[in-house]
Length: 50
Image (tube, rainbow, N blue to C red; front, side, top):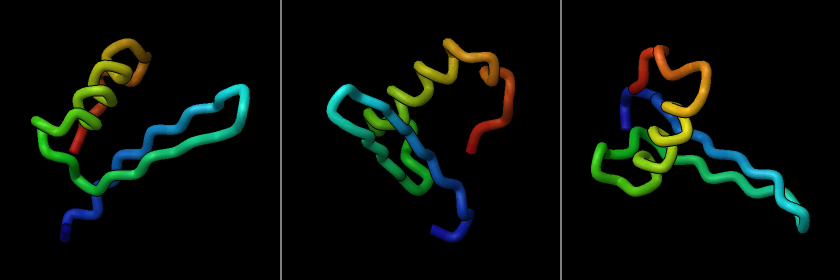
């Protein structure tokens, strides 16, 4: 990937910390769809996405 866009999803759980990093996920990617859903619930929903 040449655009440098990265999507990072972080979670704190009772048994530890987990993170998933993807570089420019496709619109059909389930990871991106989950991130898009969470973004729509947040205050950053109006920000530009790559």
